[in-house]
Image (cartoon, rainbow, N blue to C red):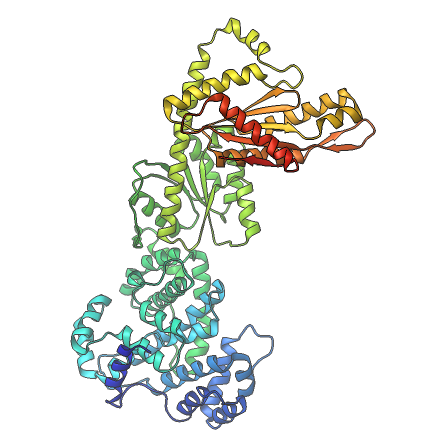
Length: 640
């Protein structure tokens, strides 16, 4: 407990009116905090109060409704729940039973507990859905989330009552300001202090303090604590909508839908959770003698506001964007999530087009030609993976950058997304900091693609100026008859062209020297005809595995040269490894039905920024090739 929390509690405890459990419940709380307390002692103490025993057993059965065996004794409850969860449950039950009325006339105690209980029920179901925390413990946190408000109404009934009478729907930050001026602290600080005094874990104290205003919390965005905080805030908002007047419900319905989108909870799931909680609410309200109260249907509520414009509250975040603006297609079936992403993208200055599923997106792609697609994974008619697969099947769409949005965290599933053509992914719930970081990464790639496309156009224009009459002769003169690859002469001419371009445009250039391992033994063992087939197999494999901009040439004998324009050493090594592994995966078919495994060694060199020459570049690549041979073959070597 912090010194500030100690000061707040010391001040309030002097009044003798701070909400605390009484009788057997208080003894249970004290007993469970002792290290030497046994389960038998706890069972014996709770059993001494028949009313408390009945409520604990019934409450445990409601909390553990999915359990295969019903709880029929206090001993069962202690065993299944554990001492800490049981202590928290007893505390919550005792406070609800003892404080359904109080001295503050303007404070509606029954409504307070109804809201608190419903928040606990909602957050328990959300926790079970997200698996972020133990549902039983999170239930108590929801139940006691507003304990500071109850304490203020009980200890300062007149002063706090006057604050409430000013405005029923006054903003929370305004109420906090009045509380600080009047008492020197706010209800959120008091809630955290009370939980600290009751030995609740520090993380729960932080959640209680921050969840009413998550947008100003210092909890690390995207962390487990951040997700729990927003989940608790969403549960509280759901309770407010469920119990509010028609004016309150209509005002908060759109905010509820947008906040649910921030928590990666789609409208259909939200409605389903609310329906499940409505049934549980009846059990709890009966158990705690709170009277039956009708909960309004979320489905009907959302139907009512569907025709109203969405009022998405933008999350805090850096919306600044690179100067380069993109054409972005958002593909999402959930209305609130779709609107949220659209708002964030528009705030960054991008052009945005919307589709509600993959089929609709395919129709828009041809018309709008987006540079970036942000698509949900799970959608009706056509999901995100199917959309991505269809997109990559057409050459004109292969350069479109695709980000998959998903709640899936399985490594195998994410690998599947990349294999069908996704470039990146975002986890739900979306955190603005991560969203815009990934967006800026996409911008850099898209802008680079545009520059490369421009360079290609320039090269194509240069190529088109060549004489058609010389084209066929040139092709024959510059091609290797055996492999069909460009020959050494072509390689040197092309290398000189690329070398000149690097000087004019300050661009990078690398080359790969590739040699077939143990080629002489192939000729000696199987004959020159099989050796020729081996060369053709390697050539064809290199050609298919190389990138579009790379130039694969037969340099001489069993040696090949790969020219890699606009490629530094690191990227060239990646290209070399792809070529090497593709060759290693091939087998040369022999006439006897057998197979001979093929491997290559690769030397990599990058054009130096200093006084490097074309000859020096080739010598370095050749030296690195021999280093690869000396190191055992079937490997790539690069040196500075």
